[in-house]
Length: 218
Image (cartoon, rainbow, N blue to C red; front, side, top):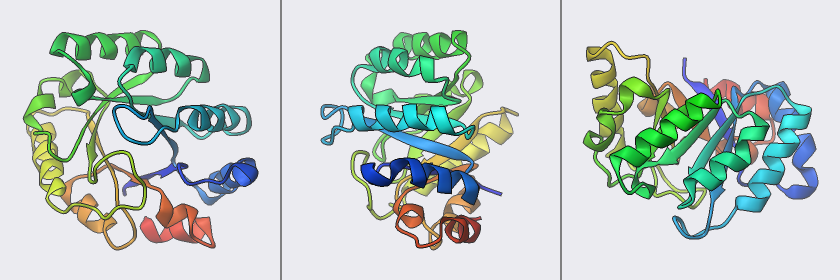
């Protein structure tokens, strides 16, 4: 069964605490925090996402799944460490070298946070295969990062399939997460390709009944 990481990008501020409580009751597996800096991607959500993550930390025991779509990876890692997220994902494209990638992975592990790497739709999975034995998760973007409500790009699921085959062939414990355009019509394709965790935003947040939406996705 695919786990559900609910993106809270479109949650309205005035209803935020109640929405987070309702999502916990509805059975989400993770809260997905989309941190954008207005540089690596067009949108800037840094302050709102930190505020939301801080609120969740105070009222919920559901694990926090932080996705950094930023240029300043270390600055943002340090900002989120006190909130004790379960996972922090950073983008391979935001790194200048493989050595930098390894340094972030080591730093996250030193702080008891699971390390994950993400790649955009046009980035080859070959770029991250070498890191799979030392990371918890690979996040495959199934849309261009930075905007909610996009349609899943079917070609990106070929990368999920390729990664899954590589993970199984090499007997690795690495999870695969997909993010973008996942809803009840596309989640089966993602699962069949090999996804372990699906990031779902508007398909849950815009639903009248969170519990029913998550149940249908499962």
